[in-house]
Length: 180
Image (spheres, rainbow, N blue to C red):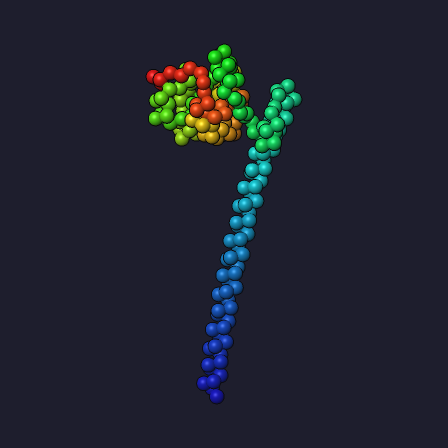
């Protein structure tokens, strides 16, 4: 009888230990879930603050008389797309400075004269080279996607009056020259 009681006591102890281990694991899992939710809420708060800042800037620009395009407002973009013909006319008139974000291999075939060449993968480290020129900046790449990403990055760093060349250099019909 003592042996049966001892076996039952050992089994009860094992059941208790398994239950304790599971409850500890559940506690850790719950804490992991809470930490993950806190991180997600923090990220969403940061994204919301960024979006609100962009909308405030757009509203301030509109109040100052700047004409905004509807896509800028809908998407909260502080930059806008520009078609090749309009961009070419402003470049030829000296009204735009040009930032080319293509790679060195891509620009070897030709660039818009006077363009500042900063490959997109170097932009984060070199964006300070963009002087606060009063002229708007036309940002170009091969097809228009990397230059849009560059505009998004630059606007987040406080650069304004940014224009993305729709279609990139593949759409450009103006003069080009080999980089020096």
